[in-house]
Every structure is written in structure tokens, then in C-alpha cells.
Length: 372
Ligand SMILES: [Zn+2]
Ligand SMILES: [Zn+2]
Ligand SMILES: [Zn+2]
Image (tube, rainbow, N blue to C red; front, side, top):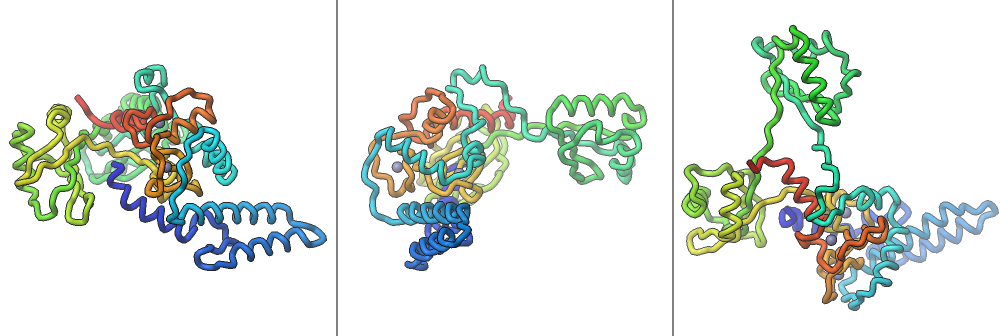
């Protein structure tokens, strides 16, 4: 979840701002590394424009670089940013930011994003599950080559698979764009008597949901955690540990376990687990990508194409650690209102779970898990 990515994200974010690594073209020198970079760039713009055949595109690109460099240098300074919350100011900043971002980037962040108020999500067509996949295994002879068997019987061009991966036991995982294509492929396999007898079809089952146990002291043994979970969540068997990662401090670890929806219900009620002399926070774990640089969902900071950060609290263009604002404004809802004409309330943090964008990410994650 966010906590998982936050530490790593912050490191990347700071290194980006410090080194200006992403907002520069090759022409740009960091102001921190070279105090003359402003002058160097200005000189290059002068040269590009002074020749008998001025290179306007080059000059404009250098100007963009200069402006991005200036803004990034402003952001990396520790001096607090004065409180400002007028929507005019935010709109202006968004406009500036947009000048520096590419259009496609902007569309990636906001263009097709679903932003229903949570109680209106029914009116939005469900997102197709990513890469619906069918698993094929040889029925008897495990040395059979399924690709060869399929090649003889079916032309892949008629089915347009998006991916084909080998599986253990000479199996194949074949992905398609839509689940109706899977059904079509599946019925073809059943119609053909040779394929039917040689290939066993399996459809991947949904994974269980998970929960997270926050900030477990490092020396804690798994058996003690399992014992505490067993008695306090009324479990018969130990739970499956999915993974663990660094907690709020280096001396703690977050643990993520698989659980049934019944166990999640209990977790929602109790919210804390006692382990030894510690009461530890426990809650459902949502595994999705959220960018701590631009606050969009679907990617993380290291994959962000934006050049200027957006504050998760006030939507202005600074890091959350530099935020002085006393009020909230959600950048995702604000951009949606500005660029798509929606009328979403914006007076909340971009990390607020009730935000329609946050809800949308949770709903998409939940659709991939088995809550039965
Ligand atoms: Zn981003
Ligand atoms: Zn802020
Ligand atoms: Zn929002």
C-alpha cells in the first residue's frame, strides 16, 4: 500500500529534485552543481537566436528547460512556501505545470480516469480485468508440447492472444484482451475432439484479500504473531504470510497476511492486535500503485512523467514535507474538474480514502480478490 511505497518514493523524489535528473534534457546543468547553468542556458538561447537562420525550436526547448530547472530548484529549497489557497492561484499553477508536462502525460494522469462519486459507481461500466488469462495443461502425457498441438489445430490470428507464457508441467498461460475472447477460445477447444482430449483447461482463481499488521517490533517471531492472530481473530489454522516490509522505523516491520473476508470483518471491528506488550494496528491491505510525486493512481514515483510535484494536502506544487497549508485540496479531483468539467468536491487530501479516485482504485483492487 502507500506506506510501502512512501519511503522508497520519497528517496526517489528527493534525489530527482536534488539532481534534477528527470526534468532536464541533456542541455541542462543542475543549478546546485553549476551556479552558471542559468547563464549557460541563457547564452545558448542567445546563440540559437542570433545566427542568420535562428533555431526557434531549439530556443523554445532551452527556455522550457530553463523554466523547469528554475521551478525544480525552487521546490528543492527548504524555505517554507507561503500559505496560499485561492483557486485562482492553484489554477494558475496547474496551467504552468501543464505547460511543462506533455499532453499525453496529462491524459495518462487524468484523461480517462473514472471519477464517480462512490455511491454512483453503478453507472460506470466495469473496467475489464487486466489481461484475462486461461491456463492449459496436457491431459495425460506431460511431455506433449501444447504449442505444437495448438499450431496444428488453430490459427492464433483468429484469436489474437496478447501474451503466451509457459507454465510448469508443460502448461501454457494464454492471455487475451477480453474475457469474451477467452470464452470463444475455450469453446473452440471443446469443439475439437482432439484438443478436448489432449488439453485440460483451468481458469485462474481469484486471490484472497490481505491484511497488514503495522510496525511489528523486529525481534518478534512469526510463531508469536501467528499465535496472537489465531487467538484474537478466532482462527483454526495459521495464516499464509504474503510478505513483509520495513515499518515506520528501522526497528519495525509491516507484515502482510492473506485472509478470508470473514477474518477481514473481524479485523475491521477490532482494528488492533495485542502481541506481547504491544498493541499493533491491523487493517485490510490494498495493493495498488499511487504516485507520491503527482498523486495520480496507477503508477509509482519512479515511473512518474511529471516534472513538478503536486502536494497531496493542498494541490500546490511543492512536497508534502514543505506544505504550510491549513486547508485541503485534492489535486486529482481538482484536475478532473478543470480538465473534464466534473464537479467533484475538492476539499479533501489526495490520500483521503473517501476521494472518488481513491475509492476507484480500491474498487479495482477488490475486483481482483475473492471476497466470497
Ligand atoms: Zn506521478
Ligand atoms: Zn501543500
Ligand atoms: Zn479527491
